[in-house]
Figure (cartoon, rainbow, N blue to C red):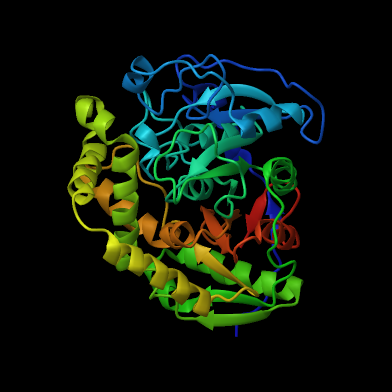
Length: 414
């Protein structure tokens, strides 16, 4: 039986480290004022440079894309809505090439700095927005999450991050990667602010208003660091206590494993090739080595039958529904340990990617919302992220239940 641990605020002094050297903006970044007034008055955004801004050519993470595409004829609806609600744009932020990385290492120019761990990457592909928000250069990060591109940077940089239910936020005007999994995502240092942003851009939801069960994946916690495992256990215990829920231990290894990662990677790769195959083939010389490897695999898979993988996807979703019914929220690791050092080898990058997708692929395959809560491990002082994976349509409910344990400012001590 886990003992309930009260969660308290700890200062976030590391977040003030070298904001002027964040390297988070694209070379042709610019600011835009708000167009209206509302709940986001005075808030500044860092916008991932893959959302259409009228008259601007998105980089999609590399100069070659900018050089071979035309300016946008209009602004993405989600950006228009945020500007109309009082938010301004502080800058257009870097991302990993074609938004296809979870490391934060293969964008344009110098990789964005992680103010929490300056010697480590921010994770990706929403590396620029995460860096900007963590450094205090913006209060809201608007990015995308296909395989973990909001959740991993949130965990790496000590931020709140939301991958919403697939389709809850309009993604029109954002460059696609794999449309079946692409979502708009939100990064903030303040949970109440994240809630305000969601209220502005999130569609009405029909998910549960309350949860009755908090689930801990007991069988997979031996595979993550002590800090990550302690954070999951203690957040789950406190969440169950504060929300009046049953605390349950479940075996989730069948939905958190390498086979699920491989299934997701195959499904995603086919969609990436369908969206961008001709351009990627023509401009392979502009791609980073690890991106090229994924592109070659995508081209290979594009010529193979997908029926078995589609059936596997349906079976995965049904199996997850059995283990996590609509009254349950799972508390999960987001990263198994710290983000990668900036001098990591190619082999270390591949290993990190595979391990990170172990914990993020289930949210992507299921279309479920996942809210990342930043925490600081009391025994080691390390910053980690804890994911709350809820049922479809429970985005607002996840934020509400998290507010019961999260301080208005700072991070959790676990």
